[in-house]
Length: 510
Image 1: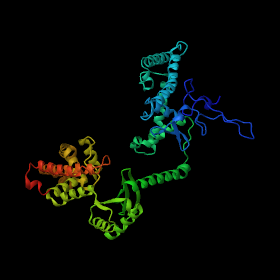
Image 2: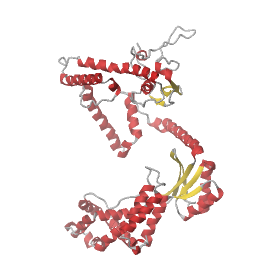
Image 3: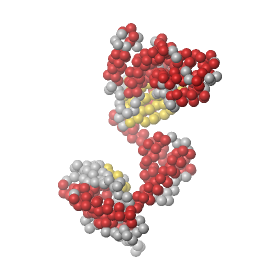
């Protein structure tokens, strides 16, 4: 008998309590051959669960519940558990009637009871005839415990069980197989210089799950398939996602966001993204090296993007707060009466930190002296090694999302490693090195040993850290920050005022 004849399309074994039995297709005219159809084959819906579900796009693995309209991935097997309310891999239907629920419960219960019968068979097995009798004894004991547990409470039939304590023969072999597989995976990561955080991605886990479902003999895609066939499929899939977003923009509106940056060749790139309650998508990138300096050209560029997205869909456009972008935003609002130009909150805070550094003397001087220390040390390999010896591998530079936040975070790193730096510049290794005898080396040593320099760092950090906290909030993707920004700015001002003990001449310039 074929597999389709004994097993349902969702992997269920046939039973006397309502499991589906396969139907046989009638012979076509002109031939005497007949075909045996699987329970879930197109045109064959003999499983009792199909009375309560509808195949989505003729896909038997994708079924919509007739009562709550939920689309269930996993076929008729999961639909029956959904209707019975077993909570096994799928949530319970809240709209189904009690009669249908009882009917489905009876069907899935009888199927699950096959597991109890199997447990009895394992329990009755003799371990003396096997060279692995010790491990089989443990499996028999585990099966006995499971059967007794289920017998106490039938409602526990579908609960997931902790079988970690049950050592099975399969488990012993699978452990070695997993180690071998893991070695192959990590070798792929190491030899191809793949970042470790890729292992956290959902795509990585999904990929391995799909390969495991295929089983032994899986043939991976070839180089040509990756760069041609599947690349085209992914492009088409991305276009479909964008079309779904565009349909949503028409209902709820959207925000256009611009993000400009300059890379090593001094070329300016403008990224355009569109945000809505459905999420943020990347729209396009434009080389703006020739147009980023004039308000008229920026206005023309933004106007074209609004036209592409659809003026009726755009609620606002967000750019940085530079003078040319501000002027272009005003011009855009003059032409497009339905939208607003909004400056980027993160850029506004970054400009505040820039003002601190450039307009407040103690900040300007302290940051400049701090940069001298880091630049001097990190431009000399021997000094980097000496630094790591005293700081226990800690660094003095902490990158941040914005340039001026980095300046203050670097001051924070210097302050955290104050003791290590002082020990380094008073050590025998430093005194006996060639660097200690040079003019630049003596200047850096004097800065590190200057007590006023460390006091100035504390003053700068008291001023900047409350703002950096707000910057992290508005520049985070974890939650919408606009509802918190005004309250957080008030708190930042209060913290700055408290840090200077309410002395106006100290906090008013800030």
